Amino acid sequence: MIKIVQDGHKALRAIAKEVPVAEIQSSKIKKIIANMKEALASQGDGVAIAAPQIAETLRVFVVSGKVFDDDFIRGKDLNVKVHEDLTFINPIITKISKDKKLLPEGCLSVRPLYGKVRRSTRATVDAYGEDGKKFTMDGTGLLAHIFQHETDHLDGVLFIDKAKDVHESTPEEEFK
Image: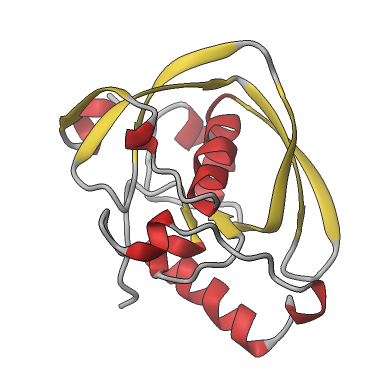
């Protein structure tokens, strides 16, 4: 199993490097993305993971396909996934809303801490997909929150650096 590194590991505080576009479809990058997806799938409450969380300081994050499922959004059956995981390589947030919301947040690399983070309610990201093609995605609510959380990871920032009311808890307690 792929290990998810925890707070204190140097990769989590490093500024991740861009993946050269010509290398996006290389076996090395494909293996890193596969490892990220495996690590994310091993965590029932995980909604996304950034490469630094598996000790790879590259500008890549993966959003779990369950984030795009209606049942997940409504809080039902969190372990069934209909959509594919979505990979963002060299992501750049190009737009964020002025409207912000304080929401509970946790992190696979800062177990078992949770807190509330104020983030924009809308965000637009430009990135490359696993196929090497550039795309743009708009996100609202949870997805916008994820974009900002994962981009922070790529800049060496953890949610606990921004959170209010940081405390130990469980996913079931935080997101009921």
